[in-house]
Image (cartoon, rainbow, N blue to C red; front, side, top):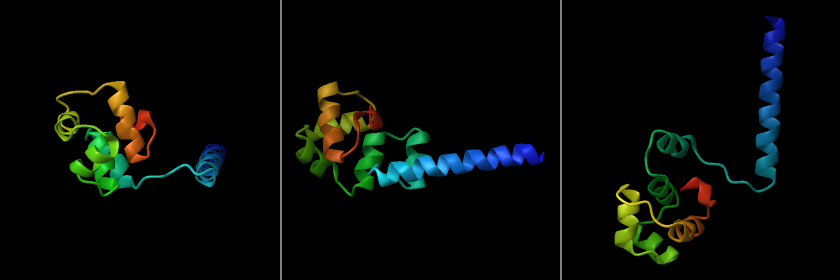
Length: 100
């Protein structure tokens, strides 16, 4: 049991070191509620847009994507092309893999 506890402690310390290094390198972190909403299946574009404090119109203007198209992507009715998703990701200041 003590050996297992020591191994778990070591794993926790290693995870902490990796997270701290990522933050020190400038990687952004997100509040648990943002992560939980995405994990629970909410549209990541909508979640990240709201986290950034943007309206649909503001994100549409910042990304150059038509607001109606943005709405249909957020609602899951359409997926959006890679080019469209790249523009949205750039406007949200996230990597494409966060929303695709």
